[in-house]
Length: 121
Image 1 (cartoon, rainbow, N blue to C red):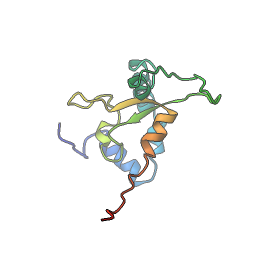
Image 2 (image 1 turned 90 degrees about the vertical axis):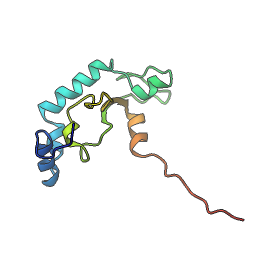
Image 3 (image 1 turned 135 degrees about the horizontal axis):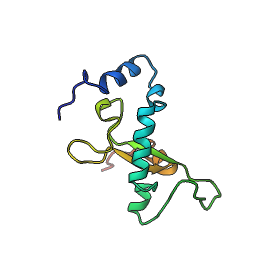
Image 4 (image 1 turned 90 degrees about the horizontal axis):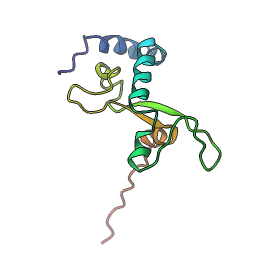
């Protein structure tokens, strides 16, 4: 499927971005339903932790005593692919919405920059 910024929901989301009102997308009933569907389909488990053999769900306690919160993460960023913003899977069948614990979500958005050292020869 070709990306078309003039089709809904892309046009609506692009308008919100242009007006610096993207928060309205994340509080809309459409997003809340898509989010709830992704949470249900992915069994309310962090998919990155699950891939490492851990089961991490909402409300679990970490070793430091903090409580786990889950986020539904857009693999294809909303600002880059607003047409996929409400889709759990892309038309090609790849996951677009991924349930992540707050820790994995933080690491996704704050990956350590690769430090390149010049060769010393």
